[in-house]
Image (cartoon, rainbow, N blue to C red; front, side):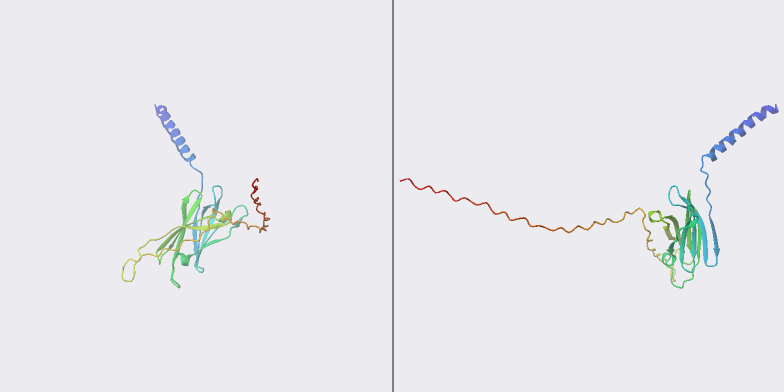
Length: 213
């Protein structure tokens, strides 16, 4: 009797194991790693960056308090070196007043397979931005794209009245797909030769027949 009960249990275990293996086998085996660290006036974060459908690199973000800039770059796997740094002026981006005490926070998160996003918050102004890195013009280097810049708290004045936030100016990001302007080649100078003057045809005089006498 004991063996009779063991056979259905063993079969159910095999079926469950097979179903679990099929479930995980259909998912892509990808690893998304990210991290954030801070030291004094600098904050660093990492995340995946997809330059195109076939090129996925490890991206590095640096927030420089002293310069008031957000920097971004990637590791070139073919050369083993860092690409040129792209940057965003955080003073203009977050509309920070001169000598204003600010406090930035940032972290990276998962956006899509092979692509992460950077989330930047400023606790004094209450502004929150979302950024990603993409391929630069003609596939050279990287650029930083802003996807959103909003407020995570309501702004009020001294009397407690709500204040309409000032929208940040659009980021000047070059479009790598834009075609170069067409320039017409200069026209070569030509010498106009006057055509020879053709005399007008002569009109024959009327023939006068004298009367017959």
